[in-house]
Image (cartoon, each protein chain N blue to C red):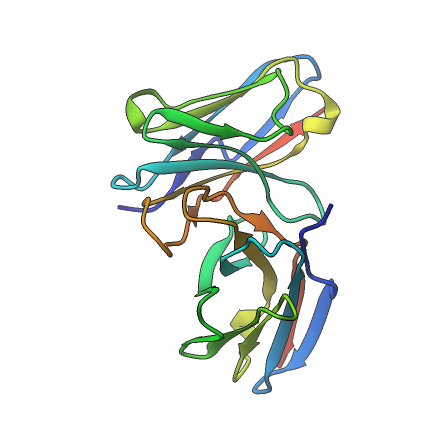
Amino acid sequence: DTGVSQNPRHKITKRGQNVTFRCDPISEHNRLYWYRQTLGQGPEFLTYFQNEAQLEKSRLLSDRFSAERPKGSFSTLEIQRTEQGDSAMYLCASSLHLRDTEAFFGQGTRLTVV
Amino acid sequence: DQQVKQNSPSLSVQEGRISILNCDYTNSMFDYFLWYKKYPAEGPTFLISISSIKDKNEDGRFTVFLNKSAKHLSLHIVPSQPGDSAVYFCAARNDFGNEKLTFGTGTRLTIIP
């Protein structure tokens, strides 16, 4: 297993367009998380899944954002009608649902909205 | 409301010396703390963690200390090496059933050869 994989690594889009990112977690991990990181800040939690169930969504996740994890494997994060404020690094992480275990992060997708 | 704070945006340390990175938190419900290291254009990489029932955890050159009464933790790296130059994030989790992490804003560590 090569770890958490995210695609694409970079995405430049025009304001108003829709974008979709993909995350492939570590295969045996049942939890998957999405975070967003802007310049000078730490990652901020967006949402997480246990298997295919979306268990929590942050208030940062506006109605334009939707995340799915069909069949509890890979996950997609879609942003509709992108705005310049959506420009950020979008990070995916996965973990086992066990006490005192860490989450492993992917390399992220850098989104630039022009 | 910044629940996890890293008040030093940057730190420079001579190679071979000890690097000490600090983190303060305000939420007394946090029970598990982690340090992540991040290189440019990469995702954060897990470094070391500590449960709230402990006050110290050591892994090779890295030691994390937790002072619950002061709501403070620190990461010690000794001896510091050039490859340790990166941004270090402190993160906290508030209970086992809710595993989202709350991150600090990071400290950029530069090791001077």
